[in-house]
Length: 399
Image (cartoon, rainbow, N blue to C red):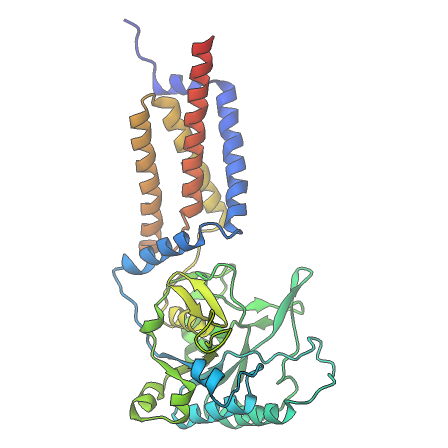
């Protein structure tokens, strides 16, 4: 009777070529994985998995603490006094700001483009909107002495650095009012909560959500202070937020005033692109809870920061170690086990373990591990190994 070889001996018998092939697969898989993370690959599925883990499976169900969204909708844009105009009439926005001030909102944030027509701030040949722009800025100056007003800040990426661009309010004297600026462009991965960015001259610029939170409750930013990467957050659905139209704000009843009083108010747009109730909504973005107007995306960022529902990612080195270990696990399984059924079972256990690790890491350590791409790579590695083994067997039988 031939004694059964030890596991170490069986791994050694696979030969140098097998293990070189494993190393090549791991290295190639890591490069492919990093590339996939930057591509729009299975975005909807990844978002659903993220939402299930951070909300559906969370023992602590989040809720909106104090953020209200006010929207210019189809009725206001297509049928009302706005008369389909872009840019949005600034004297209309001034009236909305005054109404929110009268309703005693805690913070007023305007999610509308206020950048200069020419990014470098040089003069332009038309002055059609000067009067209404002046009305808006003077209104903000007046209101900002009673409560913070958050405006969008234009920045861009140039040759490896972020640089500020010109805004309509640059150079305007707010006379010491509480006016803050924050960039409004969203991260490539909207699961991440955007934080301040360092400009080319070394000065920091807050994100729109961060500027809002800093104005109302700065200590809520302590958990994310100094993070090298934007942390992951969790999303609430659009229906979870108190939502009003600008028409309701301009002609408020008791219920409207109650919703606005002492709350953060984000004002944005959500009208149909083509005509009244026709076509997709403007400023709409795919998120873990479906398509949302930009104002709701920023509202989710604000609530995640206020409620401390953020989790930084594991560092790149740790992620590299995890990916290598799991890939080696697949290689060892296929080297030791000959029966396909046992291989499949082991692979399922390994994949479930990866997902469980991600969940427990987020739940207990406050660190988020995005397992989707590594999971795809592990399964791909296993399929390659199985096909390679079957091909080798067929060649031997043919010989």
